[in-house]
Image (tube, rainbow, N blue to C red; front, top):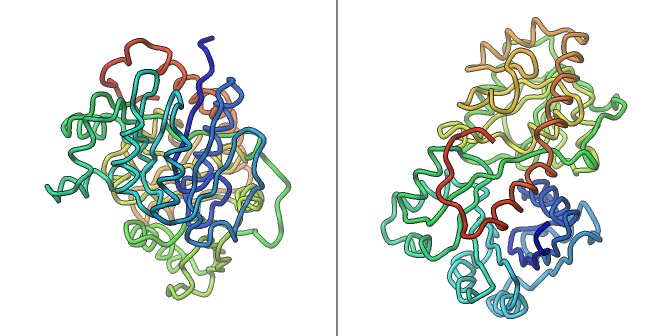
Length: 369
């Protein structure tokens, strides 16, 4: 094995999933990299009440530095990261992103590589594509590498078009230590459950694939969880839980007959972007129904390990033909698939291969993980 890396990671939060959909991705990757011997310091701002809604205490597999959400707090953290073997700036830190994207590049020197890790590449690319004055456009070629947590060939081509030296997707995955089958919880029982925060680029699709289905099937029970849906109109057979901590995600996934995945608009358009919740649900042995996106078959076998729907009518049809035994068998097959091929241990080995190659290999080719 190559020598362990000293990694400084600037991102939204490792210890809180509150308004932070990438939390389990960061946790899975960082924990798996730590097990390979790499040393990670995770810098996160004290912002958006995330520290008041922690899901975990500081882990023993990373050093967590919570800095004040001020310019001085950012600059002091960057100073502390000097001398790292690898410095990572993730998208969507939430405060002072422009400052971080610019200043983190000043840490580049012999023995220190700086990379950008985009956890919402479709949104980033649409933003810079529509604004020729966006300051991030000029910075892309200066990063040693761009990583994304999905997107396949369309995202790789787009980043290369903006001058990225190299762009490689590292997909979401399962951490079997945190997501696994548990007994069902009666308070979380439903025929179909959906977990996700209310976001502008997801809301319409949630209306189509979840809320409208509930209206079509008044005799079925539906469960909605996630932040921001308080005032959303919904039929009487939809119960709303609000924010659901990660400690309850396994029970959530194991208590419904089926769990729904709804992609954000950009993820669906680009394809090859399975959400973290897809792997979490599979890791719990849940039967999943997902909206259609290109590349599903590279992660799960449709109709055997996952149900795929192109519209609300197909979601309703799938739900009507599902039985508890059919759903359980599909969940068992999805669990076997994800444990065999899609854990964060697999992704961490991919990460390590990237940085043990000399020089960094060229553009990623192909959509499959």
